Image 1: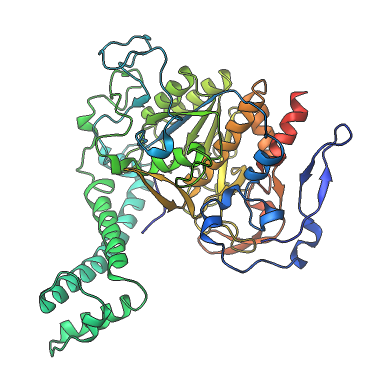
Image 2 (image 1 turned 60 degrees about the vertical axis):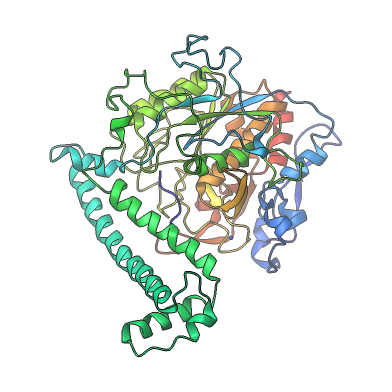
Length: 530
């Protein structure tokens, strides 16, 4: 799984949704005049930033999904059915205060008796299943390919990328090490572990190295507190040494403690029922994703989830490194077999030796009427040019099924920066965009954080899909996909995408050229259900 490394529009027109008289109208934008509209430039207030993805493009002048408007105007007084949402991720802290009451409980399993009561192959799977067992750190897929040696499919490409990654991370390591050494030297000189900008400015020394460190930290602490800096530098240290020790290390074997053969899809007797994982903090990503979908609305704690009437099924299959195709395939099948109607997958990679296992699982999900939603990825790549796994189409081939959505990320600012700078894009292989920058949601141990990535955009859409399936349960997965794509708000402004920061029309950044709109989607679902 690759995460982000160590976020307006004032007027719009409406067009009528073709239906009986007196119907609500779908919100669109005057795309022919969009460049002439004034833009909002004032920062969002904290209370609005925490839930900007729920706001409305017209009313609130941010490119949100109109979730609040949908609840206020379309769903008030209505009762929906419960929808199970499978979160295939790094684990979910199911103890979190803002996820209480929304965690799936297997009704056919008796907790703690050591028996597979429902005969599904997983003992005591009360809230889901952990396909990683007590493992967390893993290699990238390209590292695993290089480890297998010459003659392995994609070896030359993987070896070139591994060498490039290692060269880049070593440069970063040198910079990180220098800053860490400077920090230690200043602490020793001042004879104190905690120092501030005034302490640094007051340093008296003739030592040239210390003078260099003094200048460095004078600049560093002029724009942030020492506490904030320490947090950032520790994040950098964790990232660099995680890459060197695990992700890019051909000698590392993180799978050995799982106890299975990851190259045998029929070897399924592995893992455990601890869906949080061995260390709660390592479930940060999955806990955040789960919160975006389902953290309790209106309870005054943290943020609000997109969907009500949902139960989160936790499927731990994504390590600190690249996921194994086997775990993802079995994780999808587990969620399908145990009642999930929507599955979110906020992960991805660029090598996939057993991609057919995952594609077969997606086809299986389609047969069982389950919608699967994937993040587009965070590498500013054109997915029409380079494959990102998993997906429903590779190398320009037709989509293998009609139940998969690929989601790009939006920032909370209308204009050229609306498409998140890190988001992958593609006219053919990214379906639609949703909020993915500065998203506030649950994190382990009763905390909340802003995180960003297409990893956050995908569960926003999963939440909208769950809303549709809750209130219109007779609609199929393919119909829900169609609704989400067709009901989005179309925009044709110029945005910046790609590693080279080139400009494109937003209409060409994805298949639909739209941003997800829950209000519109529910109106279309109402019409289609009739």
